Length: 149
Ligand SMILES: [Zn+2]
Ligand SMILES: [Zn+2]
Image (tube, rainbow, N blue to C red; front, top):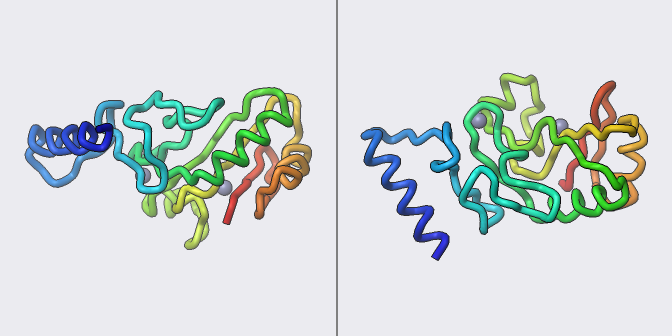
């Protein structure tokens, strides 16, 4: 049912614009992601504490969100007891290149996020992320990269 609506939406976007490139500039033409189903708008809740837009590429609005990433993020959110601010989620190749991401960045597969948490240092976030099973963690000066590669 949802899938039909999304496909319909995508087709109408393509039809209306009359070109082969449908960019997600508005919530109505958000791309359906291949790794998670069940959201079809900007504000769709993808996990109890997270909505789709938090993971969208800053450049094109596309999103891929790994289920196992979401699962670990929820566990992390529970341990922290305060909101997690996702500063970077999914990145398309273009965006990843433009921010100097590595060629095989997990952000390109929807398996990584960079996060900030009020009241916690990046190092403290890293330690708790390790406890809830994130498999790769990198501490930066103002944020923490966590992924489920
Ligand atoms: Zn992009
Ligand atoms: Zn990162």
